[in-house]
Image (cartoon, rainbow, N blue to C red; front, side):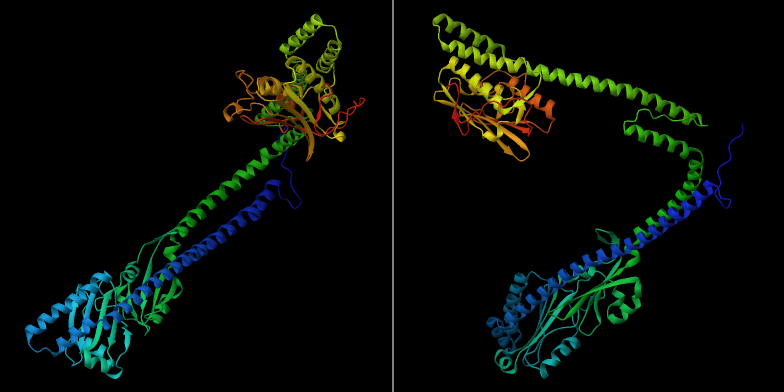
Length: 607
């Protein structure tokens, strides 16, 4: 028999062709559009994040430069007010002999050097005298220099406006040299009356500004969290001209014209410097900022083209020959997930898929068999474990109790023998003779009364027994003999040998959606190290709790109600121990309710 032709859709298209067209328009084209939009969005996000980071950096730089300018102005003001300086400048202006001026210049140098040391800056002081002579120069850095014409022009305004203070619109005469640190310069002219007395006509201070220098020095390949980029930094004066720049060819150019020439290829960020009324700016090359993304996107586009081409061919072949049989297999597997183990895969024309289908059919048959076996085995195991736990009665307890009965019978014939025997029979009946595992809380408390009576016969009145149980809870269902191992622990391990009167309290209360049962004693208690090992059934039998009894109670709760129900133990050395069980609230079992046991810390019925 020949192969069946591939089904065709109306209009002459095969299923594979329709799938190919759908793939192109629903997957390939949207993927391309998403990648393009993601690339543009990613570029924009990089520019935005970098702009925010650099604006924050500009704010800090601007504040630092402004703070330096303010300190610079304060230093200039302190110089003008320095009496020792005005006294020496007056003497220098009046002196005519060279030896006198030399001696006075030493004093002036000492004054200025003190300011150099205090400010820890590099720069120069230029002193002009009231008679028009000067300037007297004192410097610790030779990079700042002005011509006589420049110095005179700076002071020419003082003749018109005596007593003015002004930051010069210059970053230093050598700022056009690569690597040179910009300077900040300040001119102060003295009022005529002060100048006539002191002989001081004016001061010109020019100091290097290290933070401004660091800002101007950063240029190509600036490192940020988003990578490296190229940028150009500017210091712009009050006249709008570039005073300093990382590109020295732009020094002296009009900054607005520079920004216009940059166009949309750069992001220009600006911040003002308040005190000298300057601006600092940074022009970030967008292309260099997004170069890594652009390069990556080229690889992405190439990879996308290759992937689309491979996907087209692969999907066409995959859809034609494989998808349909796998759909059938997946459908049957879905049926198996709903525990329908009768699901089977029908044979197809592909041997490989038939082998997979045969394996699936065999697996489902084996899973069905194993599931049935596991369910039966688990049910039997749970039943056996519960039964084994129910029948774990302490043999020492039975032997000691029977021995006590024998001794009482030998000593005297009285009602105590009958009462003790009846108590033992009550406990034995519920521990060994019942098929059901749930009965009313009232019956559990009655069994505890019987057990406590027997233990008091053995140990005397060394302890008291109380119950704190509301009568409305007595009919609720609890697992049989669930409290007896806990009370036994309190008597044998918590109170035995206690030098004071012991007490045991059994309490019950509703807490949320659970019935809470507490067994409390005021015995020896345990430290944290011993408390951590109490659920180890192989632990030693040292004073504390009976680990086997606790382990059995815990295991029984897990078997009956799952891991969500557990047992909690709290203990404090010298204070006592509290064991807490959190049980589900069960409806009363179908059996007669045992008579009321009493409410709120009453004594044992056998007391």
